[in-house]
Amino acid sequence: MMRYVCCAQKTGLPIVLSEHTDPSLPDLLGTFPADERVVASSGATLIHTAVESYVPTYPNFLRPRVRVVPNTIREPEALAAPGREKDVKTLLTVACLVPYKNTSRLVEAFVGLAPDFPDWKLRIVGGGPEERALREQARRLGIEGAVEFYRWAQNDPFPFYREADIFVIPSIFEGFSLTLCEALAHGVPSVGYKVCNGVNEQIDHGKNGFLARGGHGVGTLPDEICKLMKDGELRERMGRAARRSYLSRFSNTVIHTAWEEMFYEALEIGPVPLQMSESAMALTRLWEAIWGPAQQGNSIPSKGGLSR
Image 1 (cartoon, rainbow, N blue to C red):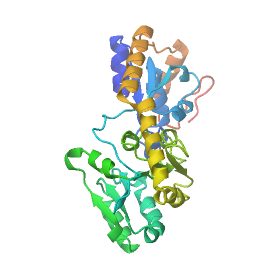
Image 2: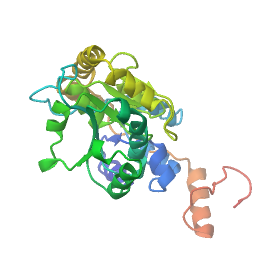
Image 3: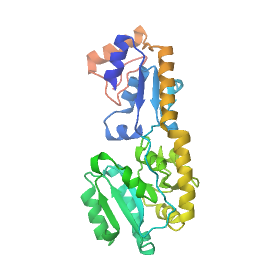
Image 4: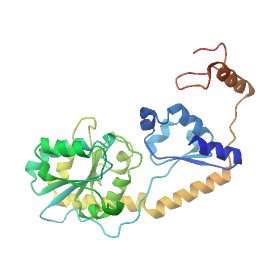
C-alpha cells in the first residue's frame, strides 16, 4: 500500500486508497500496523472502505476523505427457492477454511439442531488448513453423516447457493463478505454474528436474516438458525427480502456507479500534498540518525528531549 501511495505522490497523480478488510485484523496479525495505515492513508486523495463501521477507525483528520462503497458480485443466472418443500434441505456456508472464518462454531451449533431436523444437511463449501480438523470435529460430535464437505468446481460456488435454504456466515472478522453478498443475490436468507463488522451491515436483522449474539462462543447462533429451519414461509419471505437488499444496495449498477463517482471526485480534487514542517522534518531525520527508522510503539516527540 505504501508503494502505491509513494508512486502517486512522486508522479503527481490523485490516488484512491482502498481497504477491503477489517482494519483490526492486519494490525492483530502484525502484517500492517495501525501507524503504517495512517501514514499510507495520509497520502491518498480519497480513502475507500466497503463498510460504514470502519470509518471511525480513521483519525479525525482523515475521515472527511473516506468514502464507503460496498462490494458487488456477478449477477446470478438463477435464484434459490428457500421456501420450497424438498426431501433434503441445506444449511450452507462458503468460506476458506481458516481459523478466523470460525467455521467450527457453525459445526458446534449444528450439533444441537441435527437431531430435531433429520431432513437437513450442513454443507461446507471451500478448502483450507482447517478442513481436516472440521471433519474430525464432525466425526467426534457424531454428526459426520449430516455434514458434507465440497470444493467448488472451477472456482464457481453459485450452484451451491441455488440449492441452499439458509446461508450461515460464522466469521468474527470480515471486510465486506462476498459470500454473504452472493447469498443475498441468490435470495437466500442468512444468519451471522452481530459482532462481525460488515456482516452486521449486510444482514438486516429480522428482515433478510438474523444476527446472533456470540462469536467467540457459539452464543445464540443455533437459536437464530432454528427460526429459519422450522419455518418455510419465513425462509421464503426473508429470501425475497435478501434479493431486494442485493438489488437496492449491492447490485452491479449501484456499485459501479458509486465507484465511477468516487474516481471523478478524486480527479476533481487532485493529488493531496504531504505537508510536514521543517522542524518536524529535522526532528524525524535526527531521530532516525540516532536510533534508526522509527518503529511501532516508539514515538518521535514534537518538542523537548528525545525519549525511547
